[in-house]
Length: 124
Image 1 (tube, rainbow, N blue to C red):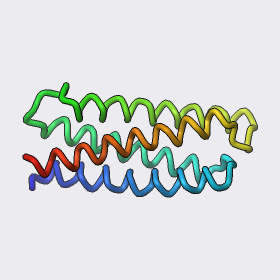
Image 2 (image 1 turned 90 degrees about the vertical axis):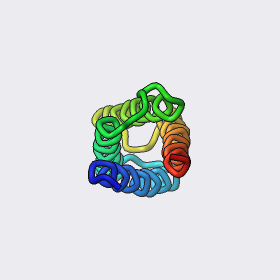
Image 3 (image 1 turned 135 degrees about the vertical axis):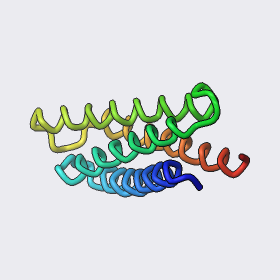
């Protein structure tokens, strides 16, 4: 495995672990806090790192099914994190239902992108 692919694979897997942990904690507590927001932010940074590594190393065009799902999942997750941070900065600590639902559904979509990529890498 090429080093850039290895870095991308490790980064996206760490992002999956972090997104899973913070999404579960957020759904259980229904409270925004600095730890949750830090976890989501770290997940987005790791996902961006993976996205860049995979994009630079890709031998296929960027507009495959996985590419479209992956890019859109990254943008939606990053947007959700920005929304959660803005909500927290306004002084809202209790999680509004719309933010919680959005983050839960986007996590599912993001996980779909992860597993689509894992499946496609085994087919290569």
